[in-house]
Image (cartoon, rainbow, N blue to C red; front, side, top):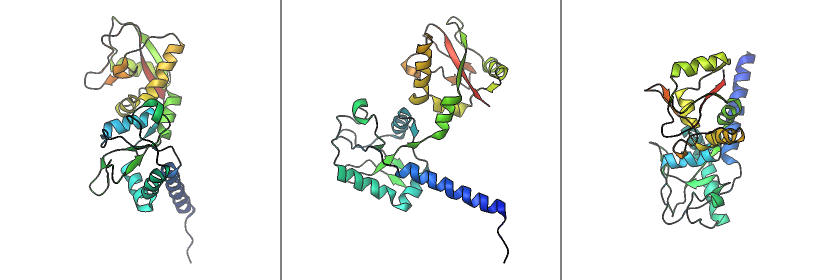
Length: 231
């Protein structure tokens, strides 16, 4: 009888542990909320922002598919019905849903649908995002430039990051950083160092625009900042 190669055993063990981690993320006990009569359907972007505000993210398709097959989504519904949690005036009320991880959403793929329906009360859970936590921990504010300059080129930003032994975040990383959790961390840092920052339209983050190659903070005075992250 032939033995299984050690590398194959390691790979199988890795897949098992990864699946167990995703299952824990989806099945962990969190506070649940229902929704009011005026918020029966929630769009994907608002839901994503809601998760990001908690330092979490929306489940990926493969995670939702796994949760559905394993029966976890039925457990969520049972828990919500059993708890009979009072409906907040509006689901985004910060005081009510600060710790919430359940929320209604219209979430659909060709073979998987989660509809925010008052009768079925199908819900989607936010899950932990370890990659986001890593980026928060590894990011660093650098390079102030005065308001009369108004922008910094992509090349100049890349050069500055390289000088620090770091790198400029990718377009995807910048887009994800736009959500409140990461940018709130940056705002707090700027305030603690008496640095000025942009307005609510960008959550204090000077968003890089790839097509024009600049970090814009138009209509705001003071210093702007770019972020480098570890390579």
